[in-house]
Length: 422
Image 1 (cartoon, rainbow, N blue to C red):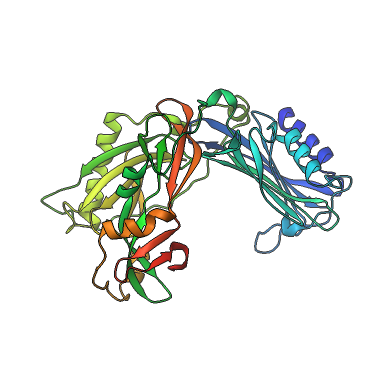
Image 2 (spheres, one colour):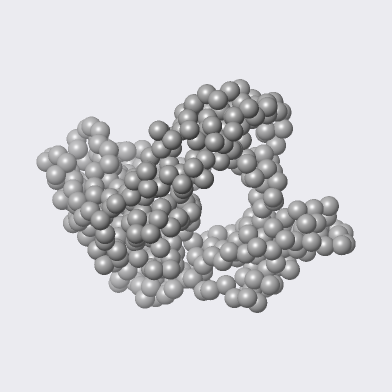
């Protein structure tokens, strides 16, 4: 075993009191975050002495899975399977919440009330979230700790982002709903929600979440941020005159990466951090078009390539249609390509998810206008301060997050809680 890995093994055995365990397996894997930075993780799987993997390959009860960031040396996860631990002189919390916080700071290097704060607490569990001066951040980070009735650690996980002070543009929050009224009105949109209980589609006016910059009231779209690698927005409609005969030969998707110890400890940037060139974009669009000519020959002009994204071994093209833009769930194709050859490997169509709506009762008549819906909702709007990472400035900027938990039924005019529509 490499001496650098052995050092982590010794550290885990001592820290977590794993004298009753043996190291069953270790592995390396890497992750690329939203900032396109690569980090490497060492996963150590410890089995209780005298146990082996179950017949189905699952780990025995009490297995300790310990993960470290090899580049910072900090603990990422510590999980005891089924909440059972056979640790001796391991991590035990007898001093309450303050002791848990002190231990987290020691293991992660984060500072309480500056980078993370208490989010939720129960008898055997405590959760924290990332923050800056008491204000939440996006993308965010979360910490979770659990213990058993003997207050022995059974679960620890830290994931996401915890900004440091030099990554933040600090300013005084001055936004208010009154100042953002013109934006709030524009964010009331009509959407078709599926109600599985009623087996019908319901037209609802709801607020489309958006960030409003504190400094100049410029808006920034609310996006579900994905880890992975480089992304590039594309806007290319696929059109053709002739289909291609013959079925496409799908190949198995393999997301496993072979990572060497030297790559990990030198923090070699992942291949997925490379920019997507104009030539790669062109080749990708051509390959995707060939696939559609085979698998969707009647769909010329219906599909639009909207995004290219590097993830693990693949370049992934995302395609959408312009149909049903008001529906919560849109038709989407995800096409995986080999980035070296630009051959399509496989694709995923979410049509099977949308087919469940075919038996739903059709929409009724919309009797409520957008203006009327806004008047009903405006007293229920929320505008909360949040620091949002700006890709251009490479810093967190202060914004207000505009949101609303209610909507207006476009048929009846009733104000409803969106969480209760399903």
